[in-house]
Picture 1 (cartoon, rainbow, N blue to C red):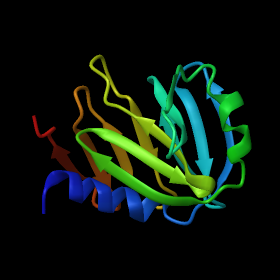
Picture 2 (picture 1 turned 135 degrees about the horizontal axis):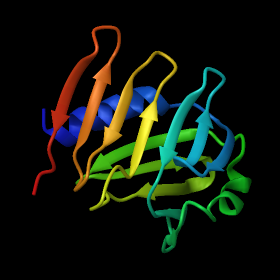
Picture 3 (picture 1 turned 135 degrees about the vertical axis):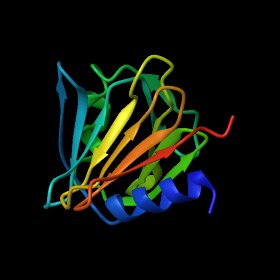
Picture 4 (picture 1 turned 180 degrees about the horizontal axis):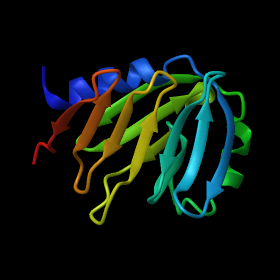
Length: 143
């Protein structure tokens, strides 16, 4: 299975069907989105795009993205994709949140309630820690 497929399956399992319950900008770690009643958390520390899938997406700094997320409160995640280092989360109402890889550090990280941690790496790869064995898997970018 190609690396993007492994990561995509991991992310779909962590986000599918969950609703955006709260969000905030945290000065030390970026934009924090809480999904679902169990507390899955997506943290974004680099620029992101947000908008309708059918329209051009607007590039936003995480410090100002909270105003744009307000209409998505209680919206369900309908799809999650990871291709070429880009995380894309599609919510109900066809709104897409897209986070490209960063060249300077971690663009995003996802922590699920059961302890799964997926962290983007500089340049587009990810590292996955799976509970309870603390297995670490490196996934390099395809380029």
